Image (tube, rainbow, N blue to C red):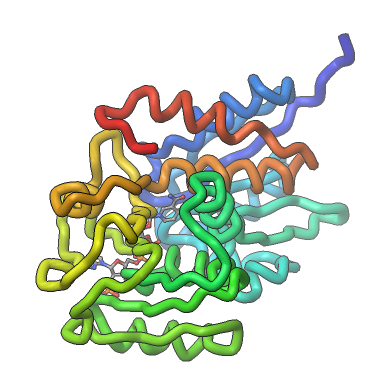
Length: 282
Ligand code: NDP
């Protein structure tokens, strides 16, 4: 048996205690045979840079970054990939030679991987994106790369306008007002709001006409039970839906690939995580 090197990775965020990442990476370790430590670290909001730089100065080789530090991670990185540059947000860091820290964003490619895995998305489709925060910004370039057109709606309209105007150089995207959302004539409706975290369902969809048999619903938020957004869809007759657990595993797989050059088996990990769910989602 060759002696395996031990790697050290951390997830930084606030809060992080509910994260499923440690279990995902444990499964990756099993299915690739690569041994490493993957731990979580809750960081005070003004301490992020200090803690991360110290980690990389000592034993750290790579890190994931979650809410609310993705923009700060972008600023802290010495060099960034093109997809991190496009979104101004970093969810994975890697130490290179000479202590250079590389920042990447795997949220968007992870989401696209999952939508493809589910056969939920195709070229030239019409997408309604609800939400204009960091996660929405992370996935927009990947959706536009399929030549899809995006309508973006958000509780705060000015934020949707800002996001649409920033990304319009990459493809077809426009902001629409909640009041103008009358008919849901879309192939895919994606929830990228954090409303579900509080079990809220402010999705502005109640007064809309829509055709559940023609429209797929995808929620970036995930839970062991049906999310409020997917519950709404199901209550209205929808049958094609998934939550963001597959995106979470996929973005982790791309992080793992960045660190080790090995792409783990995503489907088997999703199957294991879905076994704990109280509903059938795929
Ligand atoms: P942000 O805080 O950056 O953005 C939050 C967004 O949600 C904003 O558009 C905000 O609108 C909207 N919002 C918040 N509360 C409500 C509400 N009650 N009703 C309607 N809109 C609301 O968060 P992120 O973009 O980072 O995360 C968004 C979601 O995506 C979270 O649920 C997160 O868990 C999930 N996520 C999942 C990932 C995965 O791998 N599956 C990866 C990353 C995120 P406004 O602008 O008006 O405040």
